[in-house]
Length: 442
Image 1 (cartoon, rainbow, N blue to C red):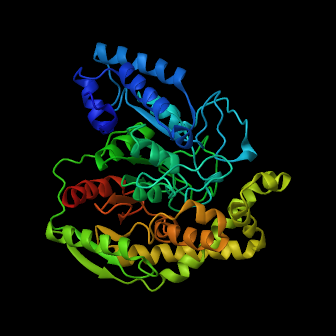
Image 2: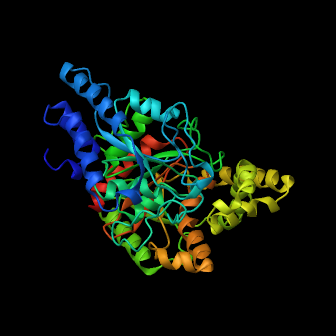
């Protein structure tokens, strides 16, 4: 177990169970790796070493006594800086919340701690989680694993890079419009978007509460299943015997391939061919209602986000990055009647989607239509920022609008993911399909 930084969370958990890894040594190894890494300050907003060491000591005692409480008991992970942590600042990547110190943990952090996971610290993120790019000049912009000049994807940017750079074996992020899946895809990781309402949002700094979800970022699908279980205190999905053979998959042609760049398009088609070669039945699907559904996101996301943050924003707008401030303020222009009608339309569309996709085990699309953009150009070109941000979020937002579970997997082409969209509250079935697809794509 010498190469702890390169192991999956599941492997570390098995190492602890077998007596080959010690939770205290694991925690110290990751804390030392963070301290030594040249970009650690761009990845972690703050560390929690005292907490990590205390939790690791307790996990070690449980392991010695044969009383481990979960498969990940004693495994250290990172947390996006919008999950409240008692007596430690939680600022959601924003100067508006500088010095905000909660008095208790978020409910999912409480549950994960009860399951024996070790909290290494809080990771940097897009300001108030309102961008898919991962650019945050107000606090820090984490580097992409493939090129530090490129953004890492957001808003769970530090969560993804903490894993990619070997500074955590797994991470917890949030996904409102793609914020788990985009950074996972751009850093060649697995990212699970859970169904809205599956995991508690109590103690999570909100963006758009109607769409906010909590989700794992991991090295592989098994880890995603284990971490999901730890976050809700349940049993992990049974992944044994999962096979891609005979699974009926549909490639969604509508919207998802509009204006797509060559690299993600080619990577997706190659991945789809490999799934078919492994025995999946891959078909094509059009869904004519989708463009109208996508048009609803402007009013639904921005109206609620501005309603939640208006007073805090307008009290100190100079503390915000201008493109993020503009996105929030765009929500002020919609009438309440328009917002209500948009939700009525979306609920009807979700029913149409459920009917159209009922024959399939999952719907396939490229996770993102673009590759990670250059951070310097995003800073200097507002039109480029707006265009790339919308394209980055476009495909992932389909799953948020339609209320689905969704999983992104690496394709083998750097920064290009393939996304499997499943049913609402169908995470276990999606994870079984995902682990089978993962085998076909390696």
